[in-house]
Image (cartoon, rainbow, N blue to C red; front, side):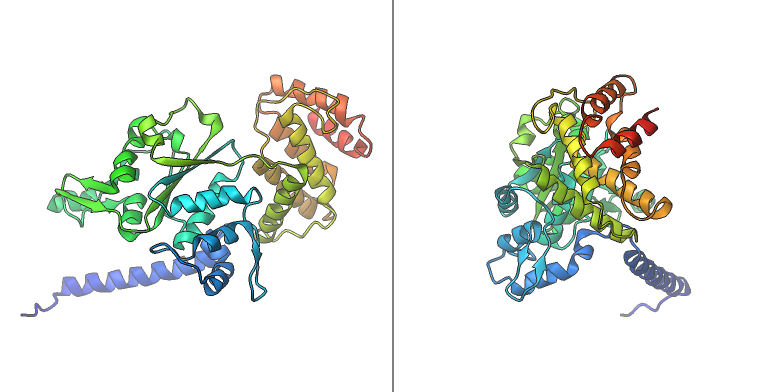
Length: 390
């Protein structure tokens, strides 16, 4: 027997439909104007071209074959001439190992110092494998267990008691039930007891829901990518039981200055286009200068190996170099002649180097006077740094 709709039901349905339509419209608009589109949106054309050209075997529920995923990350040219831009500049073998791990029953842990593109790589891996990089748990000191397992809609819970309708799935639970790739950022920042809630998920591929006497079993295609950085050792160390559930891939700093300059140039160009900043055709020399300063202070020795240097407390990562150059490009565009000059990057370098006002300022001053001051072609940079250092 069909139950006629009541006025309340009809109104509720109408409101729900209106809300859904509004939400879809807002989502579409915000996607078009997103400051930083998700990887699967920003590189949708490349992913589509790869899928069309990809005739290799694909694991269950993967959008691309492992070969195509690696090509998406590392770049290449397809038979039809489509150019796939590199998302990660580094050893191809590392990417191949990471992709292969995701095709097995072991989770992937991307480890490295801050600024080695761990988050960037994890996002693009998820986008290429599952077409969705948004199933994300951000690790912090306050991340609760509900963020990893599940939570409750307390209005539903109080009104009707525990039920599937009252349950709010975590990104991991959704990934398990849909055969997708989930991500956990900054795993070692999550409290140890919350970390350990991953053990059952990763070993048994199931998530018990004792309140309902049920469980969610992972379907084929599910896996997890976690990131952690070397500087966080001792914050919340991973238990040996949890670490065994991961295959660890260490992402190194760029091996050569040229590789780091290439990475910085590519990312600055991408960020600049998203911010409508003009291109800086003559900015390569300043990018190389920023990279040189960061590498020398990071390594504790000048490029020629002749002068030993003190290293500051900060990491001086490639990501920070990208930030310094992007900020300098904005200064040049809005308050200069559009050409990236030493004065545009000097303040950013100072802010990146001097994290500890007492110790790091001494390191920076010594570097300025013993290295920068004496280097040919760096007089303008020296004067700009002296001006902002006063």
